[in-house]
Length: 221
Image (tube, rainbow, N blue to C red; front, top):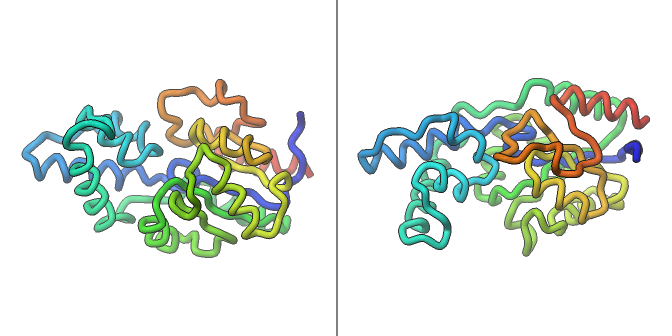
């Protein structure tokens, strides 16, 4: 089915709007250094950046949330990340142009992330996204993605029916949440994507760059 013209587009944050992996990996490796351990190669940490502490600790220490020592590491990692949250984080190339085109077309936008508000509220203004129409964090609603609740809350804040919104994200759970919320979905294959190919996610469209999202908007107009 072709995409219909959106009244708003909602975006995931890590790996979709912003390349946060350098600061996330940096925090993880500072934790390792504090324990006298060698750094984990960046190429192993980047693909799991969208999974936050769970993914990074898993890749760096081989621990799962139910394992002994995970909770302590998680607290240390999150405190370390918070102290240096926007050193090397940047918007992906093309994001500013995409947002400009959306403004010209009177398309609203917002952020829906599984990142806790503790970090989202600190990071978003530092990277030039403080003008978002809404920001829904991982702890804003009782459920996080892939549950549709955060997306439905974002649509409510924008005053729009969910079916008039698109959701763009770089993880399978983003597409699952978008579908469950009744939104059109776009897989952001420029992002981290974990270890699953976006072609298997059954998104309504796949974009290899933010500028391809611009093309999707034009085609739907």
